[in-house]
Image (cartoon, rainbow, N blue to C red; front, side, top):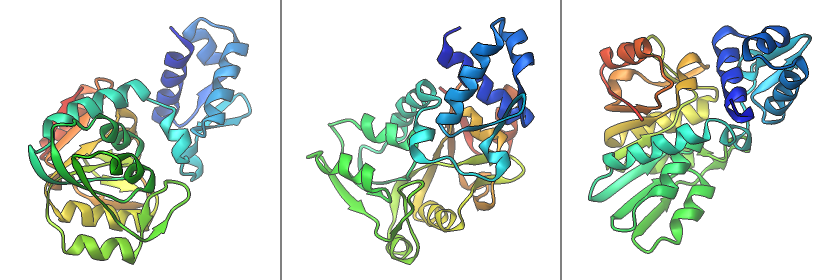
Length: 253
């Protein structure tokens, strides 16, 4: 197992169990405790774990929201597969919304050059990437930019959404469960996400399997409001079945 694969598995276990133990991980992965400590240090530097005596705790348990750069460094292969699968949900032409997020950013990079689309975003970095594409008309939602996620929020972003209608909204989330729906730590971002879904004929959620172990402060949608959930093969089959039973089609890429 490569170090990145081991670190992703450590992160998955931490989020599932609430904490991980150095000695136990060393035994289960058949490596030294020094190797596990280096893994935990790398994950802490990425902003997804916090070291504690004898182990580590996921930042979600401490009430932190990982910064965009930190989130972009984990589950990279899974996010690429999810984005590729999401291309099948694109209309031939028309208008789409792409929510701010690290998985949706992969979709932005993968958009084909043969589609003439109007693309609405609430992320200055995504708007910058899209604006140079000659086949796209890009609308950037204004508002306050949250430093942690680089997403625009508040009234200047909300008001334009009230008058828009798009074919598909490609959404990101911090947490997802059959019981709690789609959640995010910040109420202002939740309001934007809710308005995006309301402006769309169809809504497609892009979320790697780690998002299905967490629930956050602000709910912005229930699962019946989502048409398709695109995740990766790491999602447990039973959880996938629970999500599908709530309404959306589940695609494990």
